[in-house]
Image (cartoon, rainbow, N blue to C red; front, side, top):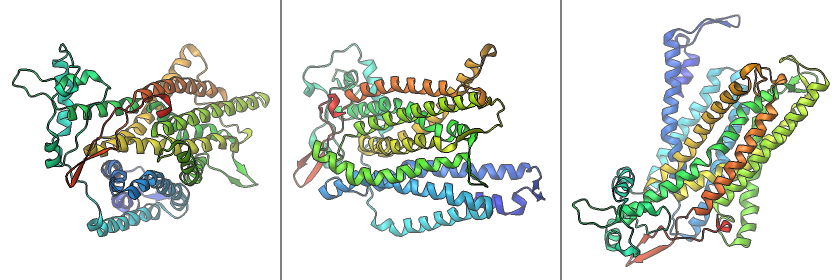
Length: 473
């Protein structure tokens, strides 16, 4: 952020402007600007997958009180993140446009420096989780390779015949022992004992590989919901630019500013979810979270589908108004208030309370103990890939529908396109994806919270087969 602030304040690092007209940036200025952006991206790559994980690690899983508080952690962590995003979209954008880019970038730079100082002051008081496992990445690669080599062998009926180290080994080393689960049985072949020099994989290592595979399958069915969320900053905005954005006689709402309603609806919904919905459902189900994490995701996905269906219905209404007033030019304003788009924005914000927060909590909670940063990597990579998938779909649909001189669903002139068809297409693939999600969720086996004591210490026993009926998604 210091480099980016310098790029817009230091005269030699920014193009010169006269009477509001700026000269072309030099190669050095462009290089410095992009170096600043990529430096921020590298820094975000180090902090985003770890900051929420580190925060959740501050709660002791063996303390009933702290474990209960941990259930609410991700709700309030995401709440604070979106509160900062709201300030950025409303406050900083205004400062940048009216008071200068230097001040607009300087304020978050100072904020980051203050945060860094506070972080280092608190370092002696933080809990640091010690990683005691071996090279987990190596084990994740080795398990499927050994299982493939043993593919012709028959898995023993007695699970005790699979290779596993003595429980005292895990006690003495402080490592986590993971017990056998009945999913992905083909990987169990990696733990078959056979007469060869090559040592088989332990059941614990096989179960860790199973868990990562299970997370990957759930991650795959979250890509379409991430694609739906990408509409907020793309087609929803483009849809808004065609509508009447005036309030009163002079003020005109920027189409992109409606995105703040996603944040506002989420900020309102998070306290209601945490303080009212969870306690109410906890009494009904006995689950500390009120509902299971996968049930929370499923509800969020349904709300997203409803939001896009509403967007399609609004687009149908917009097309009727266009036909009624004979609007053809892309620059003509459709006599229809931009506030017609509020329901779809608000629904996505409410859906995020279930979907976005649920995803972050799920991937953290269900990741192997030594790889919980991997969980937030699943979360952030899913959002990024969802945006790429959205761009791919828009490009392909535009090419296919405009082929042979046809009318593009997503043309440059949105007043002469069929955006409602595209939204309908998104609804259909989302419904199919929802079916795949329900299938994957019904087969998923959660981590167990059970612990087994060994003398004065205890080792977490992280896996047992849970009821996988639809009611326990």
